[in-house]
Length: 114
Image (cartoon, rainbow, N blue to C red; front, side):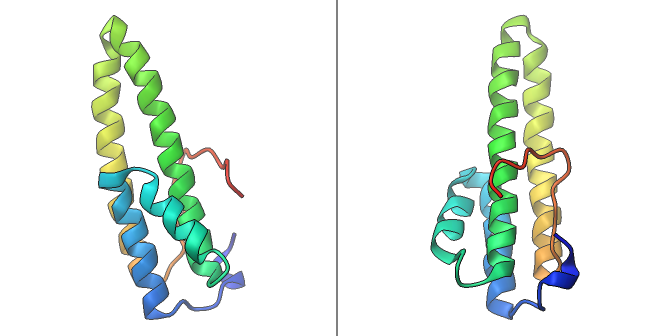
Protein backbone atom coordinates (compact mmCIF):
# COMPACT_ATOMS: atom_id res chain seq x y z
CA UNK A 1 0.00 0.00 0.00
CA UNK A 2 1.48 3.34 -0.92
CA UNK A 3 1.72 6.26 1.46
CA UNK A 4 -0.33 8.40 -0.94
CA UNK A 5 -3.51 6.51 -0.10
CA UNK A 6 -3.18 7.01 3.64
CA UNK A 7 -3.68 10.44 5.12
CA UNK A 8 -1.14 11.84 7.52
CA UNK A 9 -1.57 9.93 10.79
CA UNK A 10 -2.24 11.72 14.06
CA UNK A 11 0.30 11.67 16.88
CA UNK A 12 -1.79 9.06 18.72
CA UNK A 13 -1.90 6.84 15.64
CA UNK A 14 1.87 7.13 15.18
CA UNK A 15 2.49 6.33 18.86
CA UNK A 16 0.22 3.27 18.76
CA UNK A 17 1.91 2.01 15.59
CA UNK A 18 5.36 2.59 17.11
CA UNK A 19 4.50 0.68 20.29
CA UNK A 20 2.95 -2.10 18.19
CA UNK A 21 6.20 -2.63 16.28
CA UNK A 22 8.38 -2.38 19.39
CA UNK A 23 6.11 -4.77 21.30
CA UNK A 24 7.03 -7.51 18.83
CA UNK A 25 10.60 -7.56 20.14
CA UNK A 26 9.43 -8.80 23.54
CA UNK A 27 5.90 -10.17 23.18
CA UNK A 28 6.01 -11.61 19.64
CA UNK A 29 2.71 -11.34 17.75
CA UNK A 30 0.49 -10.53 20.76
CA UNK A 31 0.71 -6.68 20.70
CA UNK A 32 0.12 -6.54 16.95
CA UNK A 33 -2.86 -8.90 17.20
CA UNK A 34 -4.44 -6.92 20.04
CA UNK A 35 -3.95 -3.56 18.30
CA UNK A 36 -5.22 -4.89 14.98
CA UNK A 37 -8.36 -6.45 16.51
CA UNK A 38 -9.17 -3.40 18.64
CA UNK A 39 -8.17 -0.56 16.29
CA UNK A 40 -8.56 -1.87 12.73
CA UNK A 41 -11.78 0.09 12.17
CA UNK A 42 -10.57 3.29 13.87
CA UNK A 43 -7.61 4.18 11.68
CA UNK A 44 -6.42 2.94 8.30
CA UNK A 45 -2.83 3.74 9.31
CA UNK A 46 -3.00 1.72 12.54
CA UNK A 47 -4.74 -1.14 10.74
CA UNK A 48 -2.08 -1.20 8.04
CA UNK A 49 0.86 -1.11 10.46
CA UNK A 50 -0.68 -3.61 12.89
CA UNK A 51 -1.24 -6.07 10.02
CA UNK A 52 2.31 -5.50 8.85
CA UNK A 53 3.70 -6.16 12.34
CA UNK A 54 1.44 -9.19 12.78
CA UNK A 55 2.51 -10.70 9.46
CA UNK A 56 6.17 -10.13 10.32
CA UNK A 57 5.88 -11.71 13.78
CA UNK A 58 4.07 -14.73 12.34
CA UNK A 59 6.88 -15.06 9.78
CA UNK A 60 9.44 -14.85 12.61
CA UNK A 61 7.60 -17.59 14.54
CA UNK A 62 7.60 -19.85 11.50
CA UNK A 63 11.31 -19.18 10.91
CA UNK A 64 12.11 -19.89 14.59
CA UNK A 65 10.17 -23.16 14.39
CA UNK A 66 12.15 -24.22 11.32
CA UNK A 67 15.40 -23.20 13.03
CA UNK A 68 14.35 -25.25 16.07
CA UNK A 69 13.92 -28.31 13.87
CA UNK A 70 17.27 -27.60 12.23
CA UNK A 71 18.85 -27.36 15.68
CA UNK A 72 18.76 -31.14 15.69
CA UNK A 73 21.59 -30.99 13.16
CA UNK A 74 23.21 -28.02 14.97
CA UNK A 75 22.88 -25.47 12.13
CA UNK A 76 19.58 -24.25 13.57
CA UNK A 77 21.32 -22.62 16.54
CA UNK A 78 23.03 -20.19 14.17
CA UNK A 79 19.74 -19.43 12.43
CA UNK A 80 17.99 -18.82 15.77
CA UNK A 81 20.49 -16.10 16.60
CA UNK A 82 20.24 -14.50 13.19
CA UNK A 83 16.43 -14.54 13.29
CA UNK A 84 16.39 -13.08 16.81
CA UNK A 85 18.77 -10.26 15.81
CA UNK A 86 16.87 -9.53 12.59
CA UNK A 87 13.62 -9.33 14.58
CA UNK A 88 15.11 -6.75 16.98
CA UNK A 89 16.72 -4.64 14.25
CA UNK A 90 13.75 -4.63 11.89
CA UNK A 91 11.26 -3.86 14.68
CA UNK A 92 13.37 -0.87 15.72
CA UNK A 93 13.60 0.35 12.13
CA UNK A 94 9.81 -0.03 11.79
CA UNK A 95 9.25 1.86 15.06
CA UNK A 96 11.46 4.73 13.90
CA UNK A 97 9.62 4.91 10.57
CA UNK A 98 6.17 4.90 12.15
CA UNK A 99 7.19 7.49 14.74
CA UNK A 100 7.81 9.79 11.75
CA UNK A 101 4.37 8.96 10.33
CA UNK A 102 5.72 6.81 7.50
CA UNK A 103 4.36 3.43 6.53
CA UNK A 104 6.78 0.54 6.89
CA UNK A 105 6.87 -2.82 5.13
CA UNK A 106 9.08 -5.54 6.53
CA UNK A 107 11.29 -7.34 4.00
CA UNK A 108 10.97 -11.11 3.46
CA UNK A 109 7.59 -11.27 5.19
CA UNK A 110 4.74 -13.64 4.41
CA UNK A 111 1.59 -11.56 3.80
CA UNK A 112 -0.86 -13.89 5.52
CA UNK A 113 -3.27 -11.24 6.80
CA UNK A 114 -4.50 -8.79 4.20
